[in-house]
Image (cartoon, rainbow, N blue to C red; front, side):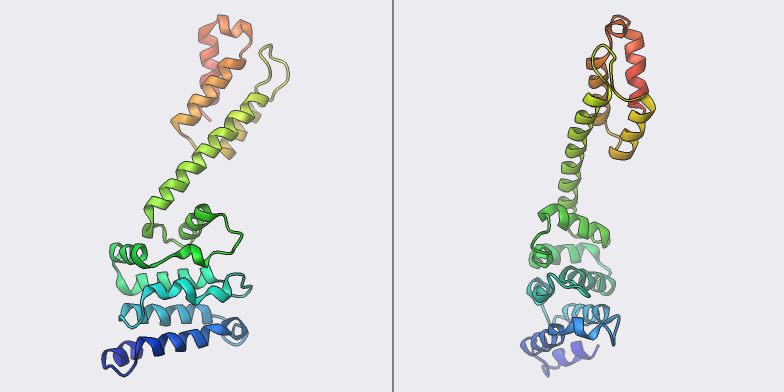
Amino acid sequence: KVIGALFEAKLLKTAQLTTLFNEQLEFIEDEVCDVPHIATYMAQFIAAAVHDGAVKLAFVNEAFAHLLEGEAITASQMACGVLLALRALMKDDAKLAKMYADEVQLEKCLPPDANGTSALAQLLEAKGLSFVDPKLGAEVAKAREEEQLVALEAYLKGALGDIDGAGGSTDEEIMMWIWENTSSSAGSARIVMRCVLETAPTALIEDAATAKASAAKLCKA
């Protein structure tokens, strides 16, 4: 409250405030021993300043660069902490999502070896912030489903055995694998049906009803 009041009274400038924050953030990991929740406190201070217009939300893009590979506190932890604290102050997810889209480049807060958009989507989901970029979440979910379908088809080709019924896994083993490694979707059902029919023994192919029943049993997974 003091930050916002001083800024409104023109007794504190944005440049002065960002300098103050940067000085405090420089050695923030060293302070964890004495102040275990210092990351939360600093995130709340920065969020309050953003909420009161004293600092732009874009500040988070560069402010935590020295924490990209932090051990006690990470850049992504700080950036998400600011977003969560700001959400609590604003109580307007749509407005925060607009600010995020206009100002934030959260990928700058991810470690150098992070897996791009997938890592970013996972971070937002884990922190309860997916609403700030719903399109990203949808894209990653689609890519994840496609990867699952490729893995499912590869697995079934080996697990179902050859066309003469030799080799392969039991129905129970296959259903358990499907349950643990894929999500229920029309795409996965189609792959199961196709793979079962392609590897069905000749006797089953001649009995269409039996072949369909066998495939349907696996599709229920």
